[in-house]
Image (cartoon, rainbow, N blue to C red; front, side, top):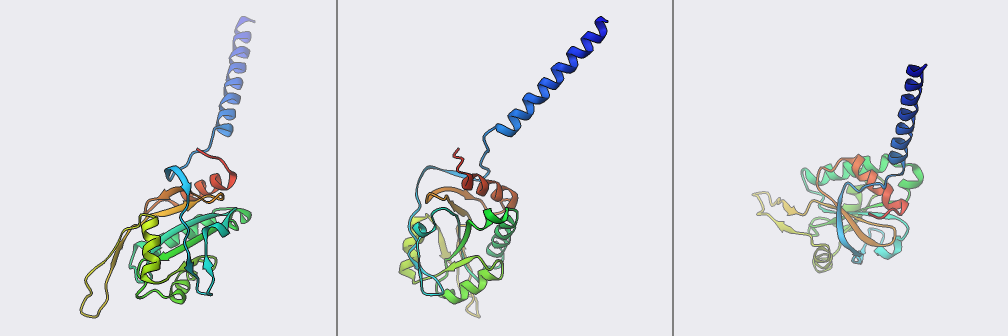
Length: 204
C-alpha cells in the first residue's frame, strides 16, 4: 500500500513538473535572434524615388516591418544570396504577416543601377520587393544615415568593377524605429522569428 502511495505521489510530482515546464515554454518572452540596436531610435528617412516616380518614405510604412539591404545588381554573391534568404524568410510567415513586411533593396552603385534596373532585379526574387536608386548625392545621405560603408574597386579591362559594401539587413519596426540588424548568412528561420516578434509588438 505504501509503495503504491509512493508511486502515485511520484507520478503526481512528474505531472506537476511537466505542467510547469510547458507553462514556462509557452509563456516565456520571445527572444530576438538578430543583433538588437540600442537604444532604438526613429529610423532615418529614405527620400529616394521609386521606379514609378514616387518618393519612398519610412513614415508611409507604419504598421509594417521594413527590411533594408544595401547592395547592387552586379554583385556576384552576397546580394543575390541575401535576397534569396529574405524571400525564404517571408515565405515562412503566415499570409497576414507576410503582407506586413516590405523588403527594400537600396543601391550602392548608382552609376549602373537605375530605378528601373534595380526594380527589375529585385522582382526576380519576389514581386513584392522594392528597389531604390537615386543620384550619388541623394544616396550618400542615406548611406551615411544608416552607417553604410561602400567603396568601388578598380575597373578591369572591360570596365567592370565590384563594390565593397556593408552586408547587413536592417529591420525597422511597425512604429518606425530602427530595431535590429542581421549579419550576412543569418538563417531565414531566425529572420522570420524576429519579424513575428516585431509584428506582435513584443519588445526585448
